Image 1: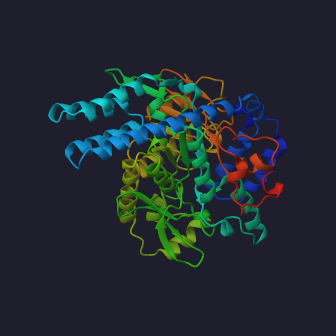
Image 2: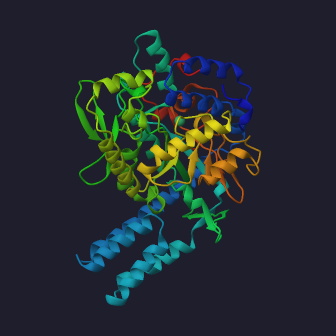
Image 3: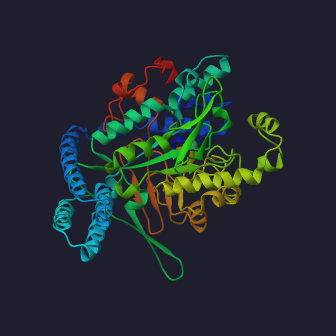
Length: 495
Ligand SMILES: [Zn+2]
């Protein structure tokens, strides 16, 4: 078990922790990971009580939402007034850029167009954008909240189903760690309505390199219209583990006809289809309809392990070598005797590229979903090497590591400098480190690193928001109007 004192949580919930431990036995590694994350996050209720309430923010946000709508309307009218010309295209593009808060980019584009095709509309638009830009408000990176989700349950009947004792025990995990597609869509809609805007974690920092390659990290403020609230988002364990089979969850991410990532999903009758069956395509669709939910096209960061492959593709060496499989890998290997591992890797790479082209970034979640705080150096080195051999070639380089089980290299209030684990991971190219923290904000930096805490948004948090003593998420959304009517509500499922 992990050491609870490693974390920011003032952990007095030993009982809960033990219970989680019992649930975890026999659950697949990836799903196990989520369990202690939640216990750890759950324990910091003291922090949450100090968290300021959200009402003022909402009021300002609502006001700004209206203003933004008006601005968008103006821009659309301007755009509509221009005939289908090159200037019209430029205006449409600049309008989208400004909706996503890239005022400099939009102004630059319009100025370049103006020299060739001078027009009053363009002048007026530039003036308007300059004004909007001047009225932006700075948010400090240490006041940016970071939320994360797991994969979504498409079919709650199967996700929360009952069966054998063993199955029922696992169902508790699905209740606690997963949201349904309907819940996710409502959460995003409500966050948008309250003024939240997705920003990339990279929007919060700059990394400068000396000639010898030494990195220096500095933080930077983010500028948004008054009332807009920046939020960073990440997704954990997007590998569609074998353990998800039979739970009404998507099975993989594929590239759609339009080149965008979509999910493959098999319904209870065995029919396979593609569409918006998990966070990636759901969020993409929402941003297509509400471009101002994304700062400069930012989406989120996807944290990947490697032991079951990535994104639903069975790309680990184990599937190639068929050597010493885990129990839940054996049936898959038996059913896929003619499996072409090279093609699987090529397909995974294509899906990963489509996801990146769409505005997402990738992070390591460690290959084996390891407990980084508890692991010795040998384990960390072996694990990192395997991740770099089997995952990185498919997704490209990344300097972000999102620790599993909510663990961290040191305690939340300790420094990384001089620790063997940090020096090693830094030497392997990692500069951005994320843990789990139930408080609204946690950020800490050193010359070579940027650390950020993340809040779990899941079934437990939604249930607590409706039936629990503490609401951890009321700054983000209203749990009562989000909770899936098919979600079991018995307290024992969540305690
Ligand atoms: Zn995880």
